[in-house]
Length: 407
Image 1 (cartoon, rainbow, N blue to C red):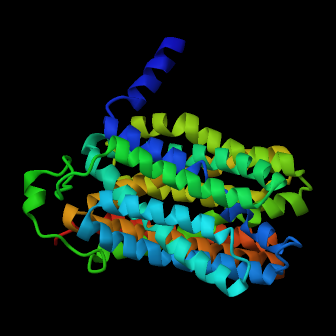
Image 2: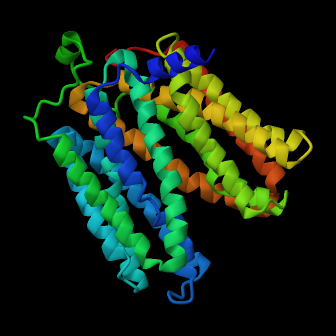
Image 3: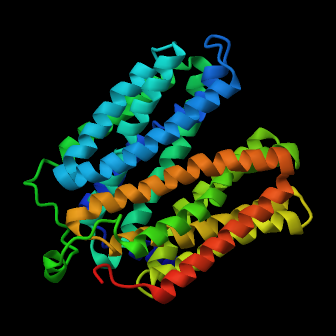
């Protein structure tokens, strides 16, 4: 039994290219420094800064708007100049802007610097997604993105824990460390990925694909529908990081450390099981099949909060369901958008995918907070379940009427 389990894990992680592993290492280092934004609202409202929660909320909104701009610009610039250049520029620019943000105290300058930081820093995402596609093969592309997600989750766990320690010492340390990990990521890119001649056509694309015309994602009707259904789903999913912890605190009276354990459990399940699950599922069915069921599972987990008697064990059970839904859907969302692309416009597809998550993060978290405040959490969980159901209907329709990218 143990031997079979070890063999399963070995097979799940085997076959990925060295470059895919190195890209995930760069992302792990970069995300391990993600500590400014989770503590930004607290930083701005502390006595030494003197801003209120409303002003802090505006700054967070500006960060979200910058992320949308960064996704758009990063995608277009990646197609024009290549993912190698854009990854480097985004990490260098983001590193210095993090350090600069920690030195400014004027509210207008904080807003301007936050927008520039978010725009530059988020331009890294489409370039990085394009790089993963370039260095992966069709048969293991979903696992390549899962390895990328594993690096992000581990990085968030490390960054959150380290950020809490540094914030208790001096908030300005957050900005220096966050900026420093960006610059360290650049050094790793330079070390492991020397600049190539500007071809950057993934070895996974066949010769026939290379010769076919490239379609803009903004003219790909199927992809635009996919993005719409993704935003609907993500608006509900992002309650996981905003209103759900508040619900645990105010309704279940869970202590902070237990809420932290719930969030940690989400990351650990992803870390230990996602690659194996994706390995068993990859290539068996259309990605939209897994997306549909994963989205429904997330919605069901929120609805259960209204149906089952509230208790701490139920909260942990629902978190397990949410995480399984996330594992089943999100890696295959990457598979789907990649399947619509050609190298010439892959950066723009990745950029629009990044924009979708950024838009959902801004409007989903803000809207969820308003619903929770004025209508209550029970109403919010029914709405989240409804959003996931609506999204799953959209993905089902897309699966039934999907056309090839160039039809």
